Image (cartoon, rainbow, N blue to C red; front, top):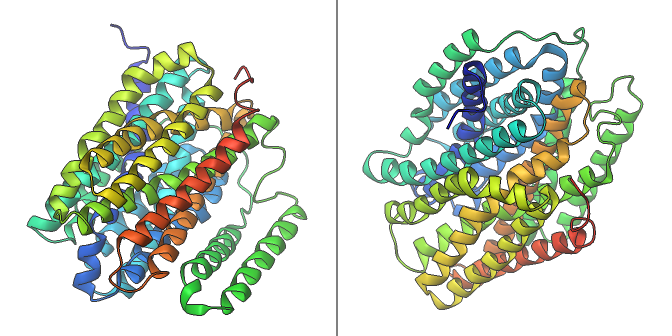
Length: 454
């Protein structure tokens, strides 16, 4: 069968997919190795979880800046800069022997990914025709997220158990070097708007606000009533940031980016998907590791085939779903899979039945993320003007990642809300939080997603 893409498009697609591959790879590889990192650094698991949360919040906080840079300087320089920052931070993290060394390195990885990700999405939006060609490209893009996530699960467990957890970061460096060399020669220059001040410090303000909010949620058991002060401070900071931004001649959050109510509903669903998916994998990993006594390597190999299954779903099943259903209905189907999978995970936590974990992984790791991520991406970018594709890509990726950071903070709260040594109860509580979020998303989508023709 003849490829629908030209040779240049295939190269651009591979480069764009490398951005989401490494972002997903580093989320899953750290998620799996986190118990080993915590033990080696002699810190509680709740404290070590900030290695993951800080990465995600730095990523989410700077995504808008990455989108803005794409709109005004073109995708090529932003993509190359992002991959260079990510590779350099990965090298620093590979030498980390203390938590306070690892945290800023992970923040650097998040900032690098925040530049590269919207640049990759912008490459797909600019160089692939709307319709079937663009849907196919975004389906492959989503499949690479699944492959990256699966690679992190498989390689992370093997590397961390056979060698040293430091190598889960060092393995990024040579491959990213190859991507930068190819990108420098293959990505065409783009005519961009005249460079203007981008208020990059607002990205730092946004990230600090998100960190303050997540810290308040994560540490609420220890802080007690002081949590309310932190959450209030985060709310005031967010309100001031938005108010100040609206007064700017060139708002950081953009203006009139989205013209369809369906796009806002897609952004809300995207946020909930982020708040549920990574916490789901974290709870599943910890449950298999702690309650069933599996090793890190065995746990990674258990999750690995289901993430590969996600890539197969993206390639073979997703195009057929797009032919038979609207994109909106595919998004709704993804959230239903997530809700049912969460119910099976809760049953597995309570009963320790392996079949429950297998069913949950099939519905969530193989089906939900493979059809939900591209569906909500397409919905959020529908109707966006070409010159605003970068900021739109930054907004949707930012909300997904911020949702992930908040979801992990809620999971950390569940882990700290029970006596030391308790495992099943906090994991069950985490499943309950995911279920509530899924229920909220279905309530949000039940009327609006069954009818639109998008």
